[in-house]
Image 1: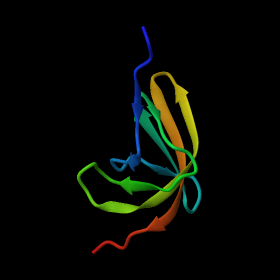
Image 2 (image 1 turned 45 degrees about the vertical axis):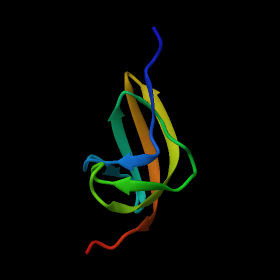
Image 3 (image 1 turned 30 degrees about the vertical axis):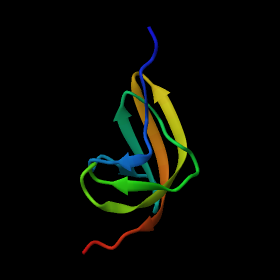
Image 4 (image 1 turned 120 degrees about the vertical axis):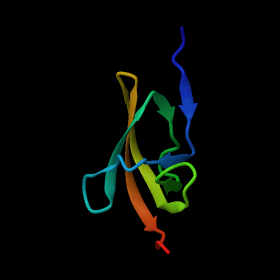
Length: 80
């Protein structure tokens, strides 16, 4: 049986991101997910909300049916 894989082209945090440094965050997602690395991606709180900014993914780790990404926020949209 193959490993189900999901390709993600934006970062949806659902408020679960953890700040590591000033603009560096770690986010854990269920399942195995592929993300483009070092390419600016939109960051959103949920799929239906506006973009909060853009980020570059620095690291993707797969373990125990979870994907952990480390990303650097490179721009932040002002909240209106």
